[in-house]
Length: 149
Image (cartoon, rainbow, N blue to C red; front, side, top):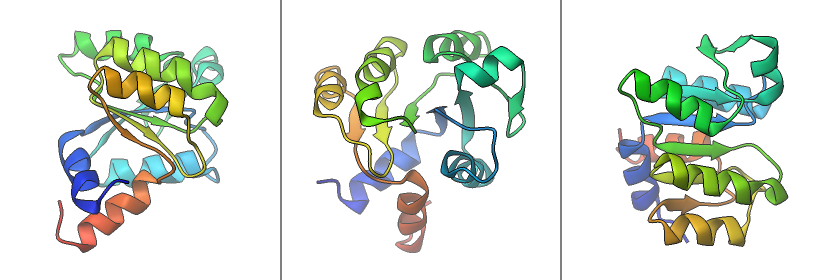
């Protein structure tokens, strides 16, 4: 189980967050969570194939069809995706975990209600920090209340 101290270390270190499944709809948890993190100084990198195909932006950021596409584009800016935050069904996480490893992410974060032991094992074996069934926004708020940030 993750401690608030360990989660705080991840939140302090990983300032560039690719959000897989980030919805363009302001009423969706992925949008409100990402907006909150952006307002607290994190760079949000939207990953949503449907939104990428339409050419729209989310939270003022270019939307990418895949983690690999996002990582390549950011690498051209001298930026690296650090955290991969997943707003997808648990069954969809293993290929996302593999892609997170391939792009050199440092953490794989699965939001509330999302757990996948197979994906966690892949990420952990590659040295990524793994968080399951936790909301990054809630944990960030808790970390700040305990003096983090």
